[in-house]
Image (cartoon, rainbow, N blue to C red):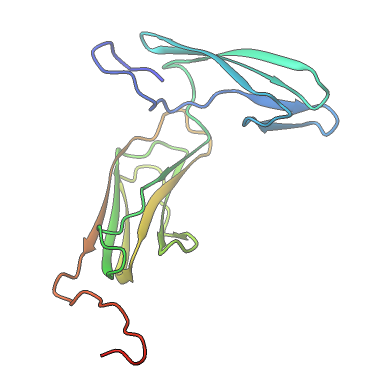
Length: 195
């Protein structure tokens, strides 16, 4: 939460993740925290001062020990290790009618060294399909859907940080969809014995 400059509104768009990590001494492993009834994760303050975000947290580990911390995210923080974007499900307002997906483009500023961007999509709520990944210097990821038919379409991307110190900047997502208005809309099925 915050804003890069005072004249811009605050928003949830910082490219940094909090350090809420639970350390398990018995297995010597670290895991990111989400709220559960056993860890009783609590987020305290979330305050920004100009370009720095301060946020506090507390959780209880598996041994019953309470841990607290304060995170500072600012322009000197490294970007998160993983990011994802998921669109809303698109049905064109008529879920019963087939549409045609033509192609899909993700535009970005040139990817800094260490980033991998992978486009994905899902047709009619099926498993995600992934397109070709792009890396350092790429300004777009492009997928040819080859006139794929669908009732519902969802799309997005995955960003993987492999040592990058600069954030990846996505500029936009542009699916090209043909609503097939020239095709007749589907009619309800008739039951046997009806005219």
